[in-house]
Image (cartoon, rainbow, N blue to C red; front, side, top):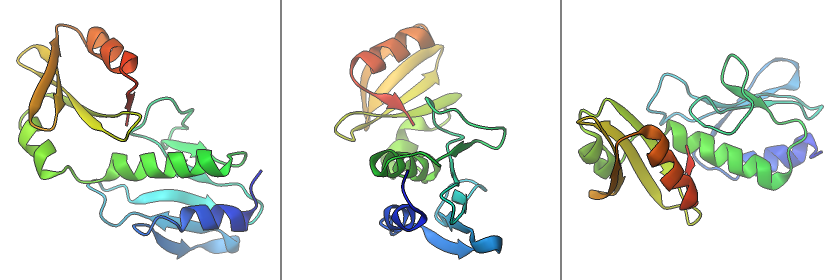
Length: 157
């Protein structure tokens, strides 16, 4: 388990996070540029090593009712990965993403092994995968689109 100081060092490597000291020596980190009302990325990081990271928009994590993941036993790489994913999930859409998503009924951002981002949109009764402004593929069901993205090494963010 990382110490409090080691966790602080990992988290503070993200310049976009702002530290907020709270009671009992605990620390929160906020992402002020969040596109959502939710701004807290790291919640109640305690000197005993316990703490939480927001993963409410992420898949593959065991979240509580607030969308938080306990990071007590995380390694430095695991902590860095979840904090980065949390920030990305809260980030405002890029101009390209906004141009693509428009009025889509449902939209998801998927990230690949080389940090390439794809958008999965439900529009006109199809599940469409976009790389930037380019349509990569279209599927009749969400399951087919998800299978394609997973096979290509992408994960939902």
